[in-house]
Image 1 (cartoon, helix red, strand yellow):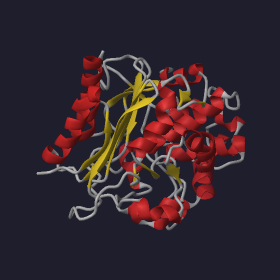
Image 2: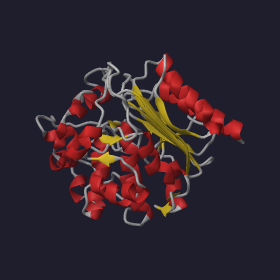
Image 3: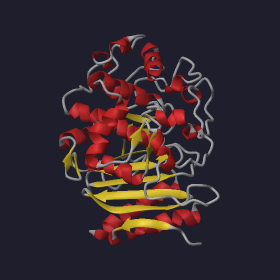
Length: 378
């Protein structure tokens, strides 16, 4: 079988290219991209395969797909940028910036709880019906009214869709801009990232439809996990809708590819500097590693260490051989890894979804190949 792979791979990272090809041969990959920067320079930028299950249309250099929760890294980066500028105090109560949020026992909920999935608002209490999911004012007002499902700050419960609205409303209250516009103007356009939170119709011709896999939710309906995924219900076919693409859902509807994610996130691996631009201070990027929670996540059911906006490398979830490494990923398989010790930034994006929320062998194999390459190249 001939695998149509295009792009660039530094010879030191040949194992990554081989692992990428192997995904098509051994893991039924259909269309995908992988990108890596090392100390701020691209060493891998590969794409290949097809846009459709029938394999009739080729994945292009500028193909975009819905990356689900890999979008969360962009929302987190936006808030960390405001914190670095001194415009947001992550340890302040959220009501300082969003007074209505103090309703129903949330007066002491701190901004940092949004970044670490510890605010107790992992899902929506009020039924999200009709077009409410696409209505920013309705979603954020409902969250402001809602009572936390557990004591805020005590443990994490993955805020699958709500995290983006919580972070985004702080950004909006502080800057007067929607988080999609803020991210575009302050991050994406500065470093040339083709990543979009809220995609105009002009992008439709470049957006590949995802090839769905079912979300396996075996949690009891009355559990926190069951309630989180039941309301609002999200199906893998939603990104095909123009309403979904146009809305700003900063936890789940970012449109991008591996290159665009890496261009945006490279600064977080390199002291705030990327492609000749300074986005934030080195200290600002280090804030990722201020541990906020550790233990079994109430929604995902697995042990996770959360820092400020990203999952942290740990014995239970060993992402990297290096301590100062963080990560996140999206439903179906997309993934992001940021290694500040080595100055590595990695992303994998695909269109054929698997059922898991925390990655799969395709992305894991590419990340492992990256570290094998880096060790070999030293």
